[in-house]
Length: 315
Image 1: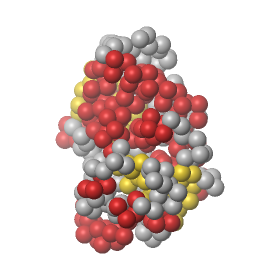
Image 2: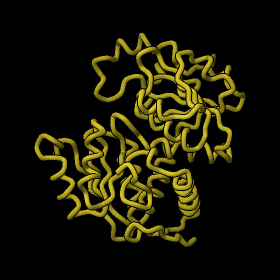
Image 3: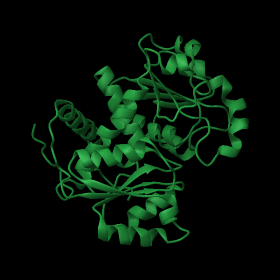
Image 4: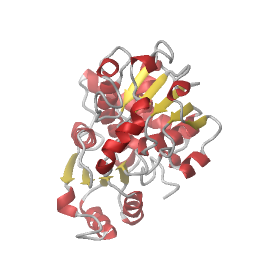
């Protein structure tokens, strides 16, 4: 599955995508969003069904995939953590084989990354990584589209990721490597992104500990929650350690004057980001949230539309 491609079988990691495939997703997103805004109704997923397999709850992931399928003519089925209980009630490979008999694709939002890998290895239909503890590719593809929409280009972009070196940061590293984005990640010591993923990145990706240094000349400042699902017992400790990494008005002043501020949500206002910044003129947080749906639609159209082949959408 390391060779999994958008027009092939699965979308597990941005690492698997060529630059041209990332650009194809972004181009298709623009076409689909334009059609949506005009009220046009292309239906490349008519008759297609997507299983939504959740170990972790989510607002945006569930709604964006459900609405994305419906808006393109398909439908979806939500499977809650209690219903399936991956690896507990039923083996992952058995779930993958059964679902492959029922649906045209599987979106899974899981804890362990090995779960998504096993689903992809076993399923006979495309598998989309809706989030794992290691990676969050759909989120970062949506982020890239939002920046492209606002800035007009991703060329020579300088982005700063401030906070925890989590699954979003890991996927941002892969994206930066593919698109030659200058990315600086600022984390407390001991909370850096995955060391193996960092080792695969080029010279344009750096991991440091000083948030003020990271945002110098930054055109994008990105942050995320300091405590992810499954880390709730660490909340108090993390809040103490991460407090110097808050994205606030003082930090924003050290970036480019027209800098974009991004957060993948849910946000803990007053913790990793202040109200003044999140609701301020630099924030594109809710554009990001909307674009999750449009990017998801592009991915679905490419993966399961017309038997997995790229479909030409008429406007």
